Amino acid sequence: MKRGVAPEQGIYALPGGYVDDGDESAEAAACRELFEETQIQISPSDVFVTHTERHDDHLLIFTRHRNILDAGDVLKQFTPTAEVTEVSVQTSLVELAFPSHTAVLKQHISSRGAKI
Image (cartoon, rainbow, N blue to C red; front, side, top):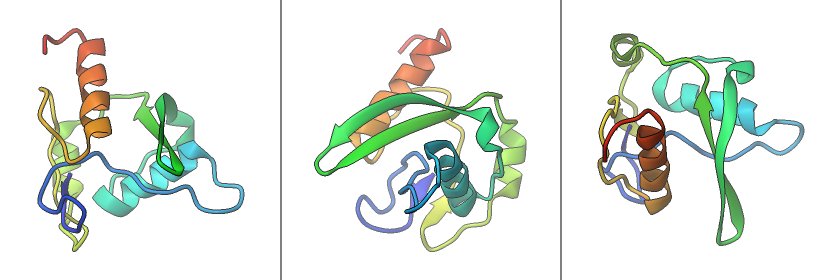
């Protein structure tokens, strides 16, 4: 997704955000953030944690959907917003807005057997 806001406005990044206070799980937060940013709706039971990383005063938790989503459906569902201006499906390594996002994309592409 291409960020419409700072930091790194205009640069592609992975969808994400914060876990809400209370009883929200990392998986539920991932689904909520994905929907808020891309209008793609998935179930928390289909999400699993793939990578965690400490960053300053917070913990980054990266998740992945158990099923591969159809790229055409993903792109058809999207409507640009002030926060996210564009979505794309990455099948090769590109530099993303944040080093941790690029590292997770690299890990994902490598795990699928693609050469980087």
